[in-house]
Length: 155
Image 1: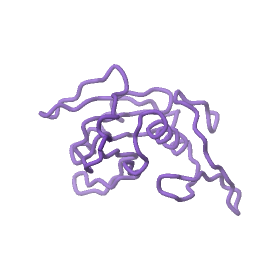
Image 2: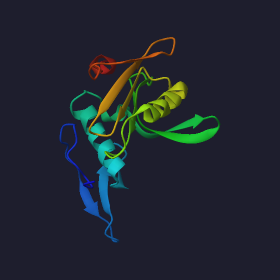
Image 3: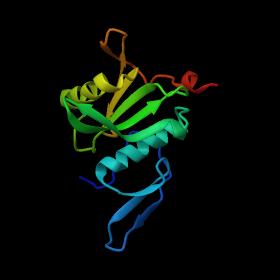
Image 4: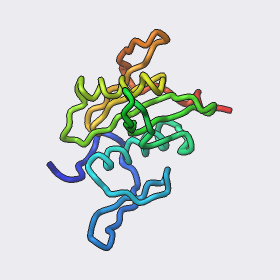
């Protein structure tokens, strides 16, 4: 696998650097920290770039590595987007390009969302993306396209 392949997401500007040990790092503009640029982080950075640059999500509404307790065990959802009122709107589970966003990844996102309660979940490996909407009774339906989230951020 090529370490940082072209993704099926719009290109985004990234600040990339090497630390004193030669490890590649990327600047996370949302959290204002340097992170090791792993293949999964490559996907996460591009998803955040898509959300802020193309889906109209304010950076302040994005939380990464969102803590979730599942069956008493601490877990972390990759990305959770909140609306302007602080309600969870979208949960995103990112994987590296060599991991298929399959039923296992979907089940992981659904488990996390049972705690978080977002309206939408998205699973992606940067090449394939699947978005599902959650009904009030907790059933999920696959969305044909990425939902228009802009109305959730108007004052």
